[in-house]
Image 1 (tube, rainbow, N blue to C red):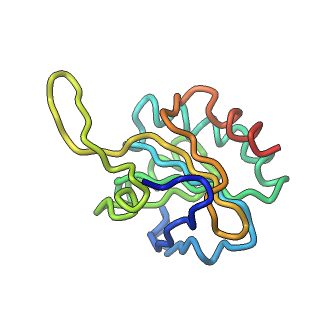
Image 2 (cartoon, rainbow, N blue to C red):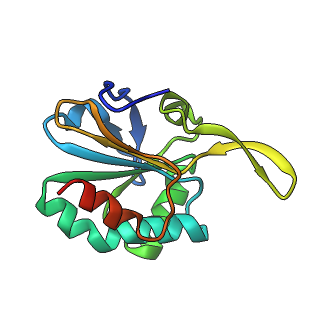
Length: 151
């Protein structure tokens, strides 16, 4: 279980354009890494659009926004285009990064048990350490909550 102060696990994943993104390449900057279960679903859309609407304010503070879900790059690209999402959306199709961050969990819905991504956000400082972990994220208003924690 990751905790604040831990070194953020490094990874490389393709973004919605298929370009590789490596976390350690972003050292020196603050990174907001938000995990979401599935592109273009109501909760995930609300969360991503919240970050979209506040993206300029994050950029002004030199903060890099990265979204991660198990969706393929093509689905991420469609999601980004449909909602004009300015941040890079990373495809963790084999959920290896979700497992590293402890967000690949057993979920229950309508009496059915399955494995999926737990909505959680990690703030990674310029030194590569976790400075804040947002547990049990509610999609609406989450971007504002993250921004206010960083200012």
